[in-house]
Length: 288
Image (cartoon, rainbow, N blue to C red; front, side, top):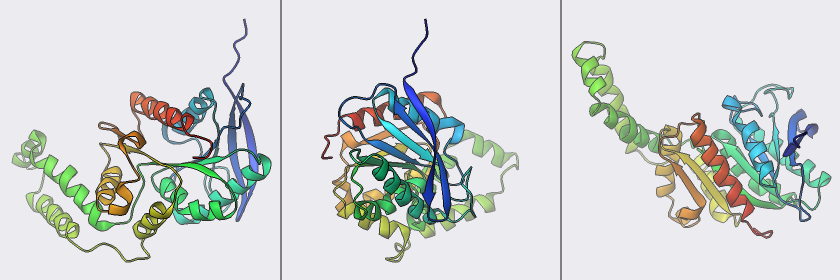
């Protein structure tokens, strides 16, 4: 007996602002009658469309099992897409180009923007441009998004790194054995504590722009955050400081994985994240 695959994968080469963008589209083997969203997966630099420990390959195939299409692609200058590697914000134009190409090829199919780390931040910052290009976006999924707020990053280090070290038996053992220099440890903690009390960044900072996009947007926002990750902790601290944004993220739209690391390297953590995202996207109404 021949087993039928649950997905169909197709290599694509899409026009980008700095050259061709190479990717893989993954579709359900048996799509339904109604068009379901296509999830555009944006990798954080320096990752490619495959992702750490093939995480994006696994995600795409899990989405296909749930009846959802996806496109994971290499940003210009990374992986198989030619060009010079640029800072993550340059990928905003790539995301818009991919969205427009998907819209032209599949006019009736809404889109979902999904990213990890600075790929999540780029996906969010691209949202106004994607919508302005008449590409309907049904949801925005941010996994451990990166922010440039030194204040929030420092607070995360103080709370989740230095305080943990102070109650760690291993730290005190290494200190007594001379394996840790007390001056270095205290100096790092003092610098982080000072940064945590400083004012927020300027209006043109990434975090300020991100807040503006997310507050103004009516596109449903989903968050997946790791507990054992300073990037996610920094974002959580920042989110708590954004009164206008907190109301957009209810418990049903945020998944917290207490023991997960930045790339969800434990299979159980990533399987749970993939299942949760697939279920949430499957429950969205066509109008968002």
